[in-house]
Length: 460
Image: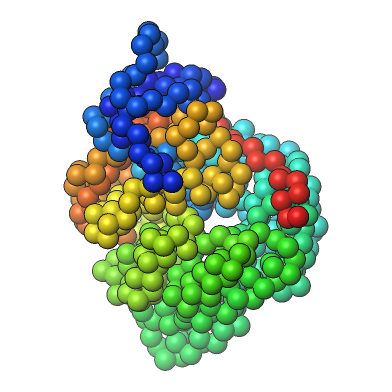
């Protein structure tokens, strides 16, 4: 399936550069052919007509940080990309990891299985966790057509073994940076100092503390702040483009923003929960995540960075966890939670309405910037030649968050019961309306794997 034919009319098209066009667009075979102001050009049109009702239309969201775990017949690709479509997300990038490696045939089988089930387009970041995987980065870039590689500075020893992750040491990190640079790719790094975290954890557990605030003290801000400095230094020495995932603290942010301002090849991501929640969130243990949710001063600093441009992207770190796995002590509760369907409502409600962020900034961090950083050349903008991925939003729609409406196999949201103002009302993937008024209208199997060949010479 290449795509659909669509005529979008009566729209307020939003562009990351700040431009707005009151008009619409046409697309053929899933690709935007014209963007027009005012009424559509004369002539007949055989495809579907979508009237935006004067509402804002943004490029479809790209969620660059999604976790999908193995399930029978790739079922999670169906449910969780369906949840994505309900939230205006038209492309997901899955954190793909396997300690055993990524044989070409197994990767091809994953792609084929996902294409049978996905509602929206998808691609992968490949985790490299062993010397053999680091040595294979060039092969992965060429054979698997991926250009982004994930590394973990934390999750060493028993902590990593419990969840199937193996963190790298500094020598491996530097070797991986050099290999990624040679392949013309981007290195994504989970930045935490494992030694600092372990000592903090031991002290908190010895004191008998429990709850989300105790969990935050077990991985204090210094754990992240030290690691981001080390990762940025090693990446610069290796000539590698660096993407720091889930930045949480003002301490990390200040250092990284200064490096960016100085011209470092550096991109910063945060997530909605770090913008809106603190360690005292009423969601309690449901909001357990690594790195942990922090203080209001950290959230305020992240909002300021989002407004100024210091932050580049927003990811969800979506995991289809369940309440049953979150019960009991914070030390026993499963990590992470769902969030893909609420990225846009949170940013509209808390960012646009409450803090006055322009819609152009939302378009940038949720679509245009991740498309540029990760080589999604056909995505991220409402321009001729790009895929017709878009979301129509009703800025005045007020809804109470209910997990039952969000399409995931997860049975909760950390925003459960909260009123948010501003919701997607239609999602278009490659010219096909896949969500309308909170209902999925596109089939499983519509989504396609997006190939991202290595960007030869990008590190020069």
